Length: 238
Image (cartoon, rainbow, N blue to C red; front, side):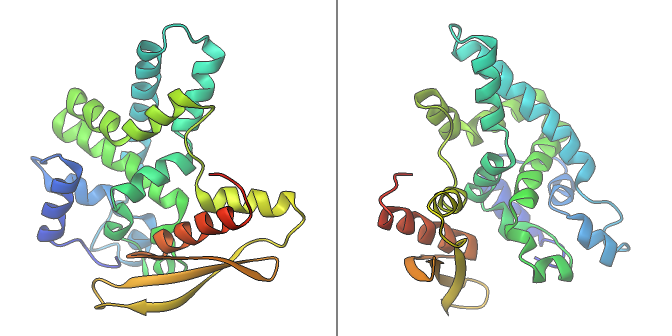
């Protein structure tokens, strides 16, 4: 998004998040990327960076406390590994994707042109900023509950294995490199639907061969599906 979110958009996002803000402007601020502020300082004089700083600290605390309580037999080293996996940029970007925060990000034209709304770091920062906004608007208990709800699948997964599920694109890159292949490349092969609700179909090419295709409402989702299919083609489990 390259312009301010509409009130309707914020209403829909609040329903998706399961949090009703007393001040919806805080939620909007959590979605403002610094690139938009640089291009349109009069529209938004402040980015989400301060909220992201606050949310980053809270997510780390909430996750650490939850792991400490849930796994009383785990030593400090194991708890540290689990926390690091859960709060990594990759893991939080995956959570942001599940909440569809990328579709609501307010980015500048330059950032939008380079896929900034789908960039892992921007998605992770947006999630942390939203957590910070919930904390300021609703208090610690609501922010804690929201964080644990958003991370529920990741926490469940990390309790069952060495870490949360890897993002298919990251895993495919590692698998390709380990086999001496060229890096995976992604291409949109078709776009269907209305402008406001497009559906993308993407393919991934590994070592000169098309290994997988995927479809989704966002390019990131389509690319993730394509990567997952390519991993299956290569005989590698996600």
